[in-house]
Amino acid sequence: MAQLPNNEQVLRALSRVQEPDLKRDLVTLKMIENLTVDASGISFTVMLTTPACPLKDKIEADCRAELAADFGDMPVVISMSARTLGQKTGRDLLPGVKNVVLVASGKGGVGKSTVAANLAVALARTGASVGLMDADIYGPSMPMMFGLQGQRPAMEGDKIVPIKKHGVHVLSIGLLIDEKQAVVWRGPMASNALRQFFTDVIWGELDYLLIDLPPGTGDIHLTLAQLLEVAGAVVVTTPQQVALADARKGAAMFNMTSINIPLLGVIENMSWFTPIPHPEERYFIFGKGGGRALAEEFGVPLLGQIPLVQGIAEAADQGQPVVLHEGNPSAVYYADLAGQVARAIAIRNVG
Ligand SMILES: Nc1ncnc2c1ncn2[C@@H]1O[C@H](COP(=O)(O)OP(=O)(O)OP(=O)(O)O)[C@@H](O)[C@H]1O
Ligand SMILES: [Mg+2]
Image (tube, rainbow, N blue to C red; front, side, top):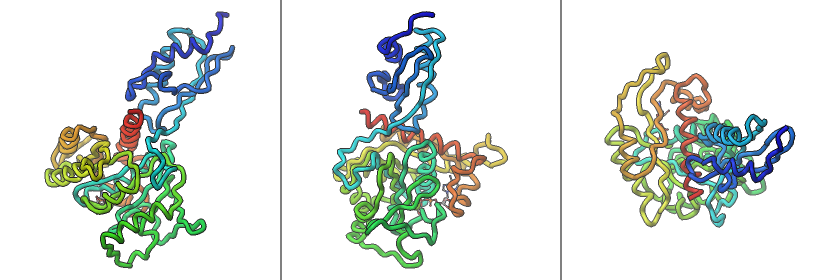
């Protein structure tokens, strides 16, 4: 039998494998762990920067190809694992949360909350630990979307514990106050209520905390920018021109010096209509290309396009985000979106 390679030789082969997004090799990025070489073969773990990495399969295949080039048919066992990167100094109100992501829109009703709920569930399904905070204190929608109406979160001492549903830790003002009680928040009260969502809540250790913002540009956005180190914001728009004009304002707000939150990308919702019995058909009822144009204007990626499909609204009303419905055409778009959002954050975190 040929002589066994040593660890250095294996690492030399693996240093020819690039992380396609981060544009550096796996060894330089310190992504190879637990390397062992013995008579049974080569075994190691590739530690990805997010469990939602869309390039997982390609990276594994590239590792196998480089090892085969140097060591022939020696058996190779690769475990793909992840330790989500974060870039915070840990000096904000949520030191245990690695990445805070704002889900924003300029205009109301474009599907921001639907996107936030499904994105959160899709990220959690990759194995990431995910929280979802409903910062829409004027019109909270998460209790309904997650089927949590009438439930109250548990307390630990004087702190609130978010409710875990569909793998996501959810908190909303709608879980704390009577739904019929009118919520009339004035500016300072709103900021205070929001602050308590961080100071009085046990969010624990999370890879991603998504924050569903109220529509438009306002106090809430500014307050969040002051309280938290935010990894970035995603802006949701529909393809229509009117929605785009507002989305542009929403996106521009994050570039303001007082806010200065990186824009991770654009998500286009209701991009086309697809009838469930004909998943290959696309009807562009609201126009076409708006999300891409906005992304290009701001120099950020178009992270995803979600079709208008039957079942999204019904699923939301029944507390079952549609991404959980295997046969629904939108489920695959949300899974893809989760990968793209995680990817945009990882690229930014590696710098
Ligand atoms: N892709 C889609 N296909 C079908 N229906 C959708 C889709 N996205 C959202 N909806 C429906 O559109 C309506 C508005 O969505 P949603 O509440 O998520 O919007 P929003 O932007 O959060 O609104 P608001 O500005 O009031 O917070 C809901 O009834 C939702 O179920
Ligand atoms: Mg909403």
